[in-house]
Length: 175
Image: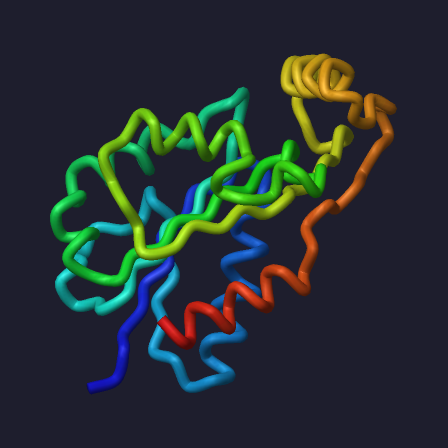
């Protein structure tokens, strides 16, 4: 039986979706049966899938509430299958913050939920101040100032390491 995989994601500014689209393309190039859904658009059952991948971005230190609710509502089923979680956040722009055990947002996330996925990954996101609302821009600049990141209002920096995303896709093919 062919492995059927679903990727369910939450993306605030589009970088998590961009990562999901790259993964979907890569998996399909290897003849992997894969479906991609936003958390807002997934209304199906998980029983049809052998592998469940959940990706979420961070906004103001937390993952999307709907992702957390989805995981809590489906915890037993997620643990009965191959399940994977990945987080996309700007803290991961720092090499020492790119793992599930060193990224503070991911550590905090798993302290608050009772789910043990098969595999966890962390990717750096993108900062694009021009796309943010005035409030978001000021808040993100403050966070970046506190964490020694870029604060220039014109900054548009993609921190995502696409070679790591590709390696993650290869890992998904071998789960």
